[in-house]
Image 1 (spheres, rainbow, N blue to C red):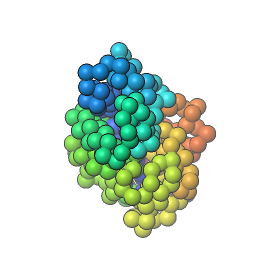
Image 2 (image 1 turned 90 degrees about the vertical axis):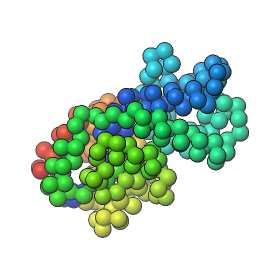
Image 3 (image 1 turned 60 degrees about the horizontal axis):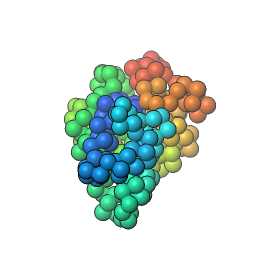
Image 4 (image 1 turned 120 degrees about the horizontal axis):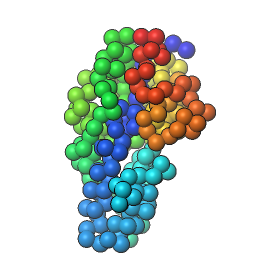
Length: 232
């Protein structure tokens, strides 16, 4: 398989998930719960979020799912009817909170620069909103490295479905088999496999090597290993 493009998941892959989303999630929950501690506790339970330790458990739906996948559970925890306006409010809170705290994992820019110098097209496929992903990449000074940034709301579906990966391939004029998708979750690798792309797992998120290996062509410690893996 000749790889001509690399697609990155964002959170847990080149963005530090807990440093970015830990405070963003808590701020969103507290905003929506107001002063009601019982409601805040229900929201924390839905997210498997430890309010004392301010951490997520590995099985939290927030780690790999898009907000539309768990928005109804948030509404249920708040004991309000679910509606599109509520979901939009959630996304606005998440976008603002993540942007305020966005933190890179290591130094991704030199890795992206080396891949670009080797002739690779680069993209981001995330289950975050497209607007949020673009703003975070801009804040980190990374936007110029990417040919496309695709979110769950960009009109191509969301991982683990292959739609976003196939959309990137089409935009770049490439075959899916010429892509590698790099991500820290099983959702990422399932999407890569379903699209026919190379699946590369990274160990900078919540998943272990044993969890990723059955779905991956390669598992690496972090994205700094990519140029060597791809002989660049």
